[in-house]
Length: 167
Image 1 (cartoon, rainbow, N blue to C red):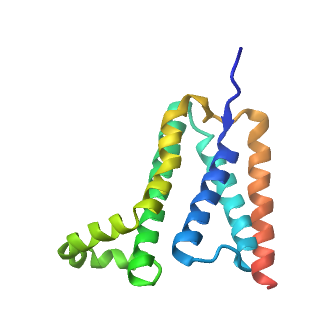
Image 2 (image 1 turned 90 degrees about the vertical axis):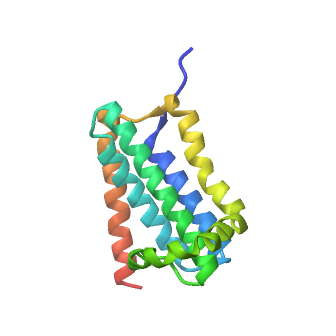
Image 3 (image 1 turned 135 degrees about the vertical axis):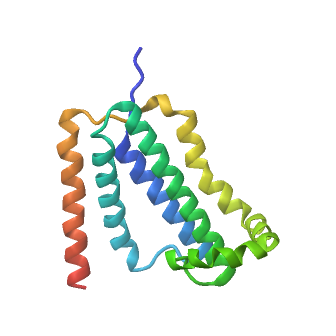
């Protein structure tokens, strides 16, 4: 009996939508807004693009890249939720330049993480599940799936551009 493998594209789509849902629930405090439609096409595009790029490499390299990207996205969303709940503003790359000042508030940072422990644990859940069930994930895209993954990404990108320009 052969077990079916999970393709990267729907897995990434689900994980990114899960992260964004958690961010909206715990940081923005409103899930439904007019931007959810645009967000769906952005997540669709990003999932298609990442799946296509990661699937071009050998299986070991694809597995490494997938895990690396998942770790980076998980850490980013964790920082984003903790930062938004603390300072009531969104985290940006320019905030990293104040990291030397943040080190003096280590106890405050640990306290904020403990206060936000439920969202932090929920954000690390997909990472844990991917590591546990890694042998059931198909990291190398089959030849017939490469073009469809790329097409889904490109179509969603053009829909996203259309919505952004004409709204």
